[in-house]
Image (cartoon, rainbow, N blue to C red):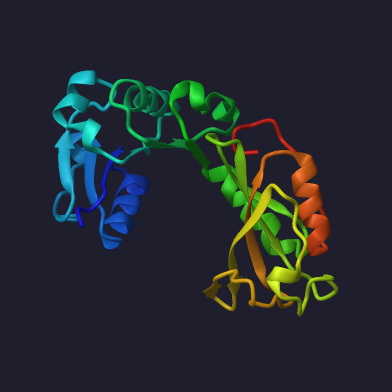
Length: 234
């Protein structure tokens, strides 16, 4: 089976870290970087390196971006990430575009209109993780997916949750919510129909974005709903 080809714009610490994880997972990775000082082929010899400006159409053409399944705009400049996302989607038809948001005030720009399928904001994710760590029973929105208008949410089950000991097939969830994983003691537990829920389980679910579905899911799991936000990441 041919490995997935993924392009990453920006070979700083973030871009290189993403590339290393993807390579370990069997993907073919192309790193595009315009700063010669950041080209460190010896650090990731399994990656393909291209010294070029990812905002230039000719650079992306030489990279054969149309052959990539995913484009990751991971530079430290939001303007660059937006331009790269737009070019990848509109000029090369890349199926999935993931963009890094450096400044929270710019989150509202990272939408489908700019070619972004998934916007990832480090400050937003860090905030969500802090909230998750100190708020057992609170529904935390980790990420919003632009396409499909869906969000990834997490809720840690408290000891008094009504679903403790219940089989997943017996838990009544909202129509627009689906459990995707359970984190338990550092392990990933697949949410099979016969799997039971335990206190302390971190339940990950994908829901249609909107307060009603999140509120209904939180109620079903015995939690507190998250406040809604207008930004692309929620």
